[in-house]
Length: 133
Image 1 (cartoon, rainbow, N blue to C red):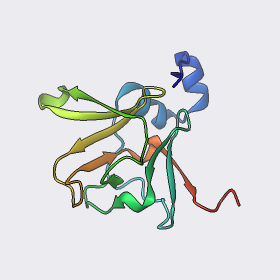
Image 2 (image 1 turned 30 degrees about the vertical axis):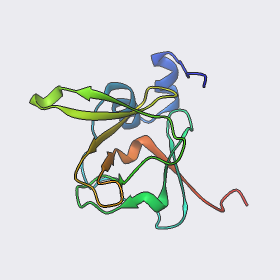
Image 3 (image 1 turned 45 degrees about the horizontal axis):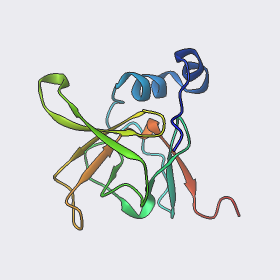
Image 4 (image 1 turned 90 degrees about the vertical axis):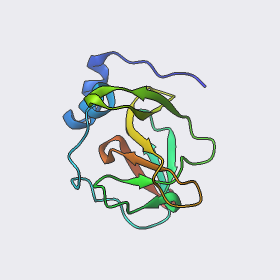
């Protein structure tokens, strides 16, 4: 896999201000502000580089205010790192292809994984399964 590297100016030109702050500076969008993903089959891609990250089949309503998934899609390049910000220890998830901050993963999700990938909606781009038709 080739890592995608861009200058800060290139990222700023490509992304909205909020998407830039979240994906490049590890910010978090406000909860319950990104609910425009349809309830249809499809794939969620990294807003920065277009890498496929999550399938709509793995999305669930955790009630936390952010899109939540039980797992990354098969073969997705989703990496993890320790996040010690805000006086707590969490597991951050990021796109391995471009380094975009996506959100965090918690061990309080439903079966089959027991995980909750709590992802900033602004870090994702959704494409309906048959949209390319």
